[in-house]
Length: 577
Image 1 (tube, helix red, strand yellow):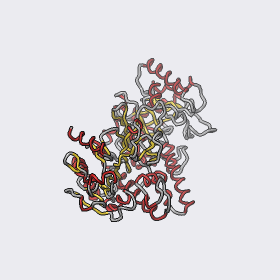
Image 2 (tube, one colour; image 1 turned 90 degrees about the horizontal axis):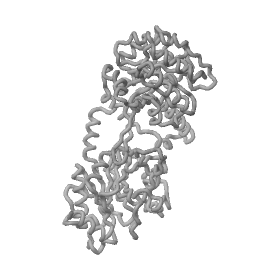
Image 3 (cartoon, rainbow, N blue to C red; image 1 turned 60 degrees about the vertical axis):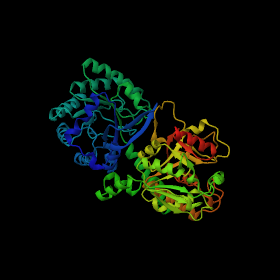
């Protein structure tokens, strides 16, 4: 993956200016080492607004002095040398391709600043932001610290020296105003901005530690007036760490073109690492932290550790994911109609139910199909499938039949209930999803009364109620909170249709949970009266309760469960049309 981010310095350097020129509000995330750089560079969330696909990602990276220093175990007082900072910067540049903005602290004296500008420009950095404090600075967000501001004319001269030494027009020097941090007046901040703009700075960052955005929005209005007076178009930058209730849209509307989320990857990593260490100490083992830890394989994949052969093997496997269809049970509703045949052999428009499923799967290049048979085993006939037998099909549930195919799960798989018909597009969309566990869920159940005698698997979504300001629904937020047949339909948001996909990681989590439950539990479990009757939704709910994330893929049409004669008639009508 990291090799895919290769980019030459001269191609990267101008990206920030190009974004600003196109009117883009640049969303920036902090990175403090190579791994966090890959995350900031590659992370995306996808959703939709009024049926139109939406994708969000970060536009640039922020190499912060605070997080760089903290990652090295040092305070943010410019004690980490520039060469040490440059090593971190190069580590991040080596595995990313988005523009980078570097936190340059005070920039040191003018001579040192010239060297910093020269080295960063050659490395492909797009901008450096320096603050108008006296060297060595103290972190702006720490309460009770004396903040000493540099004379604005001296600071302006440093800006001039830096601009004169740079070789290209792509590189930007941005001045960070610390007037509000130091308790100075708005007038002081405005005057400093004027001086720095006249000195040739490429942009202004206004900093604040207030929990309210009022003062920085007030400054933004003054900034518009200043730039209009000077006939300049220079970007305005903010870092909403303390006033983080303010949205990017609100800041953009106020006039900010660059918005930096300055320290959140390190802060979240610190909290997670501390909780993980404490949990291991409390339990004297690491089992309990598994749900909150990524797998080693995920890390390997992220940093490009997998060799070419393994990647080729994974690519080959991903083109034909195994499909497991548990079809061992006897359906009492269709017993007389089928005359001893299993439900999978029910004919609809001249083709068996299983035949329709195979056709849909084959249409999506899924040919590795395993059917778990039991009742009427000898009656199951279809080309191009593997048949495994559940000898104990009269006891247990469809989950027991599913795990007869356990050996087929190792590299990820798709599960499809044997009485489900779907349109090709649903399988196609499921194939394109990348979550570890993804259940296909119909949202139309909340608009229909459940049919008598038809047991449905209901889902309660974790993020049903969203704040009024949120207009976009992100696919990554489609998380299952509850699943089961005994959920009150009034509270349900979706119905699980009997189709699911598990990645290699998701399959490992499923198998691990199943083995633990079967080995260590007895009696009633989740919704089942006895562990021997454990069903698929029970196991999924147990995984959710243990901290594993289960996503759902939302649909509202395109599938049919064959549960009674009325469903057969509906299916025949659909196929004949």
